Amino acid sequence: MVKYIVDCFGRSFELEKLRQTLRVRKERATLVAAVLRRQGQGNDLAELTALAESAGAIVVDRFVQKLRSVNPSTYIGKGKAQQLKERVRLFGAEAVIFDNDLSPGQIRELEKIVEAKVLDRSELVLDIFATRAKTKQAKLQVELAQLEYTYPRLTRMWSHLDSVAGAGGGTDAGTVGGIGTRGPGEQQLEIDRRLVNKRITDLKRELSAIDKRKVREIDGRKGLFKICLVGYTNAGKSTLLNSLTNAQARVEDRLFATLDTRTKRWNLTAGTDVLLSDTVGFVRNLPHQLVASFKATLEEAINADLLLHIVDVSGQQALQQIDSVNKVLGEIGCAQKSILQVFNKIDIVSNVGQLEMLQTLCPDAVCISAKIGSGLGELTEAVLSRYKGDELILRVTTAQSNGKVQSFLRAYGTVIKEHYLDGSVLIDARLGQKQLESLKRLSPRDIEIIQN
Image 1 (spheres, rainbow, N blue to C red):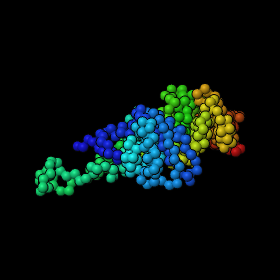
Image 2 (cartoon, helix red, strand yellow):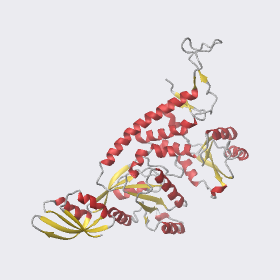
Image 3 (cartoon, one colour):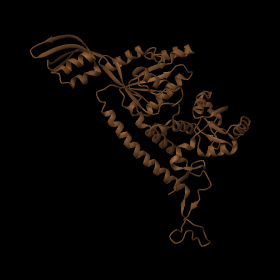
């Protein structure tokens, strides 16, 4: 059995260690951003710098070019590529990382010119995910994403893709390995594709089993209000989870510190518990392979009753990050869900004008600092209001022996008055509209809506 495979850049590696081929470890890196003029905005490479440093690179130079159009051969144009080569030599860079998605051919041509390793944005993000994956599920998801990224690039990228005939040495007569082994053979490209495709199939099968278990877990939570934390990576979601539930989740000031979902009970008020889940953070132009392979992890957001969109308002890119998160939410089918904006890290805000602008755009947003606990009371009240929905005034008739109805109204609503009759009780109460269905499941004799 073939144990080795060649990737889209001609590098040989063991199949089971595919995800380790993209790693950048303490390499000196030059960052490049090519911005199309019609896009009308620059790129200070701040986010790519953070991504590169998270992957273990030492950023030694930054190179930004505005383009009228993309060069199909080298993306940035051959003249600029020569300038990039000189800068790579000047700063002693070992890797060049683009803040753009490049084709395999563009990477190949650029590597020939600059004489250094070239990576694009998707490859870098996939590498970071690979280094962060700790659980079996996360490792499988990352490996699948990397394989799906690599698979379409296995074509015309290196010289060994000639026909491979049978084993043994060739002869003038064409008898390569004896009887039964003659013929045109099989292209190495097809061998590589078959190996990658088989591994993708195996990974999807394993992840499908994980998906089914995840769905069963979520189905077992029916009747409980589910809230999911979403947001840009390093926005403070895990810190907030710890502050609200004492989950003791690992917190680190780095990108993509959390890849696995963690769910805890959150007590909003006496007798009112909800489930609060943390999820993987998003980033601008998140590779679609990751979105697809992390379906099981994102299932919490898909099935949530309320999303808390955590925004780091201490940075300068808050508005762009909000747009990026909304884009990913749209991709996974969550755009129409109930969303509450939560502005985090207000204790270290330096640009007050930006915060005021964001508050104008999102007037219902709650300002907090998850780290020092500021604003958590206001957040709890806002969530409780969303949990209850519009309040109704009900008159409920139930048997005196049906203690579940009476307990439910006291726990989830406000009892206005009670009137006891022979064997039954009439209760006037305020109750959130969203709890009405749960009340009906407790089988009261009659429910009359007095006031909407």
